[in-house]
Each structure stands twice: as structure tokens, then as C-alpha cells.
Length: 258
Image 1 (cartoon, rainbow, N blue to C red):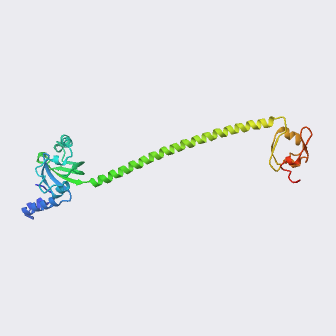
Image 2: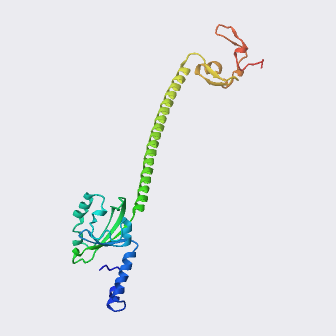
Image 3: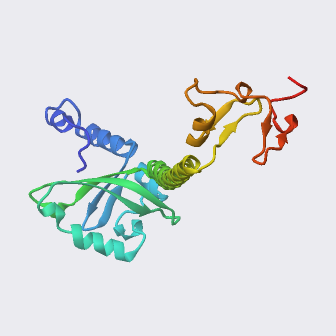
């Protein structure tokens, strides 16, 4: 008997519920359960409820006395499960698993299977199984997994891009540092040469302000007087080394006679 009504057996024995009513209640519960239920012995269907038959696309009673092979997508998988779990109920009374099963129309669905042996002391009497379709859950799960994998790929790609960007920045910093060192070295060489020349040299702006001068220039034009900061502090007339007077137009800070 299929016992799906806890306490009903005791009520029948006490005479509260008539024996025929107990059998009817069991059948009603069995047929209208919201999950697929079947009883199996030696991998052959004994009975299936409505939900089980609907789930796999079979008509009423069509699966009775048929092999479980009908629900497996391949012969190899059917044999593998039989070889692996054929003696499971000899040591255990309860089993749960997830696996793909095939409908009558050939469509593959993912199911949660839970089985319980009818009599642990005599496993050969068979077991009762409940089956739930989780295909939609698996589809969402696979979609979520695919999204996560895509996100991980994007993160990896972005990480590689950032690493390359950092590498490029480090190279640019190193290049600039090298250029700066070369510029400083050139500046130092220029400064040394500027100060070592035996002639007086000064660098001025357009208004005659002295921006830079070497030692010889300072010694020639300053002497003991306060340091000169502008060529306007010097005599208005200047001459070349041969004594020729330098025209005022040659001095950019002397314009229009000012």
C-alpha cells in the first residue's frame, strides 16, 4: 500500500474511518499531490500519479510495468545509474539527487529526485519516488552563471588593460625622469661653461633687466659697487672691442630715445 496520509491507518484500525474511505483518501492524495510520485520495484514502474504522468507527457497508466529506461536520455546513463546505485537501498533508506530526465516527446528536463524505500528490512519490495521539475531554475541558474562568467571575463580584461596602462605610465615616468636627468646634466654643463668663459656675458630681457651673468661680467661692471640689475644703470654709450660706438637701436631696452 502507498501510505501518504499520516495517522489514517490508525484511524481505520480504530473504526473512526471505514476501510474503504481510507483507501479512497489515500488514492485522492496520491493522485492530486502537487509533485510527481511513482512507486518502483527493480527499476520498473508500478504506479504513477497524475502529476508524474503529466510531467513526462504520458497518458494515464501508460508507464505502469514499463522500465525506467524510458526516462533516461541514453542507454549508457541508464546502465551507469543502475551499476552505481543499484544496491543503494540495501544500506540506506533515503536518496536525493538532481539529474536530467527525458520526456516522451524527447525534451530533456532537469529534476530533483527523492526516493524512500518502502520497507528498510526488505528493500526488494521497492521504493516510492517524488520528482520535481527544476528546468526553469536550472535555466536561470545557467543564465546567472553565464552572466557571472561574462562579468569575470570583463573584470579580467579590464584588469589587463589597467595593468598595461600602469605599465605605460611607469614607462612614461621613467622616460620623463631620464629626460629630466639629461636636461639637468645639460643645464649643469651649460652653467659650468657659462661661468668658465673668459669674457663677460649677461642674459637680459627686452627691458634690459639682467637675468643671468657670469663671473667675468660681474667683475667688469660691478666692482665694489652694489650689483647692477639693469643695463640702464650702465653708461648710455657702448662700444665694440675696436672702439666703434654701438648704435642705440641695437639695445632693445632703449626705444624712441627713452
